[in-house]
Image (cartoon, rainbow, N blue to C red; front, side, top):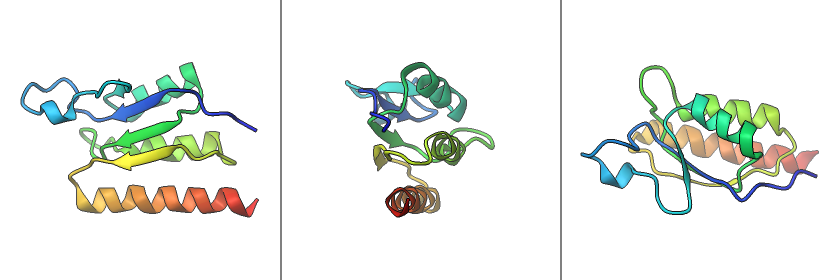
Length: 109
């Protein structure tokens, strides 16, 4: 069984934007601006214990790309805890639905 690392990932492309301080990396989290950076953090530290996710990461990049990779890499979980802070309502629903589906699939096996 895979044991999650103590890493908590904050995924948001605006972590350095001075006009959006609510998007800056909170204490206790490691920040990633893109799905590529989030994948790098997982490769470096292992499966995170928690994810705090924005959906839109600039251009065509979204949190979904990271989540698809994460679920393929750890298909049996455990599924990290998560929260969605995206202001994109459709994107937030997509993340929620994906995470619920992944969680259910780990119970079926």
